[in-house]
Image 1 (cartoon, rainbow, N blue to C red):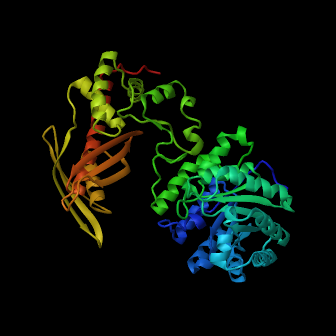
Image 2: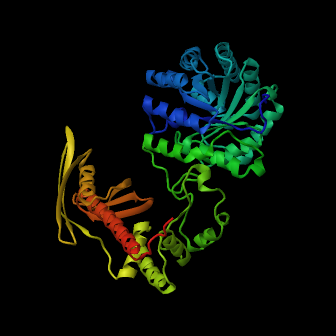
Image 3: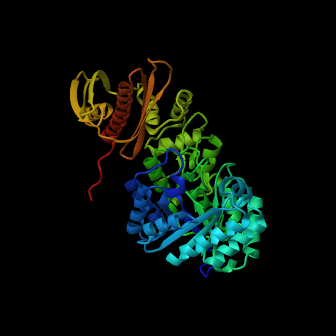
Length: 524
């Protein structure tokens, strides 16, 4: 190994190269630059910015990242031929810390069916490629593609030849996600202990997730001597993806007592970086995604929630703020218990007697059977109903008219009726019919919110299918959600938004009622 900290694991991010190669994850040049800057802020050690010979656009993106992004090493990928290597070098040479990453397949199946080359030819080609790259750049990484299916002795020969030719990093990839942890651990142990010159290079691991073991295999390689892990944000990549950067990083952090290793990643940037990639690519993050998924710090089971209220370590091995999330979310749903409901009611500023709580809990269970999860506005409405004996809000939709034109802004006009008898008409413009209508509602009611999520899905089939709109908003630090189902998705969105406004108005009314009965503040 090189003379750096032996307990430091370098994080080599290939989101912009291997990750972008996955279907649906292509990025424009500005998007790649934006993502590269986020990766630098995250603290990755190496950014593999792309495959410069693949296209003029890829070369330009790699070149711009190399010129603009400081901090990490900027790597460009190349096959073991002069044309690829020249392209890669011309793209990354402007970087403060450039690297050329060359690769060549070594497994029997690739030698026979893809390259039609004998073992001696493989070694000769690898050596020539590494030597030429080293004549241009001091930092050279070599990857024997499909290493996990390569004969161990031949793999050793190729790696030794690459080191002698000038490689500074040796990456051992599980290109098709074929290996298993015990096997890959043995591969790295064998190489680090038996390759001549192993102490002069950094061994790296690059795993794919075809059998769902990319992270496990990467960690096994680390235990076998690897000190660089190649991974991607959200685990994106070809086929089933790559090892997930956030999972690798947090596994090493949470289980530092086992591994005795650390990274330079600012883990508090994991969640925002994950969300940024999702917004750029349009690839949603599964709710149950480890570390950064919406459910990673969410608890609905009554038993789990009761434990969490006693101490977070009962059901959480890491804290939300460790990865950049704001807080643990005790999701209120049909599996939740009375203790979690009481805690949420207290957080919302209500004080209920045991009898009142019992009534609210019964209503809560009935509503939870109809809705998948309940938000703060739902809870407030239940409490208000228990206190006042009525529910609902002051605003009702009388009429909706929207006009959308692809050449100009859309317009929306709403007619709202208030329970006090007022009829208000308001018109507004927006980026689309929904945006225009929602802005008109805000202006008419005087309630302005932060729209956090707007979702539409079909709840029936056919041309006249009904569409369900789910609107999630934030107001004064609280979350409110409204839903509506009609055959018109714009109308569904509008009615769901009015449900949110009504919940907020009910909350405001409760606050005003409390202030009227509260004693005046003492003079200071």
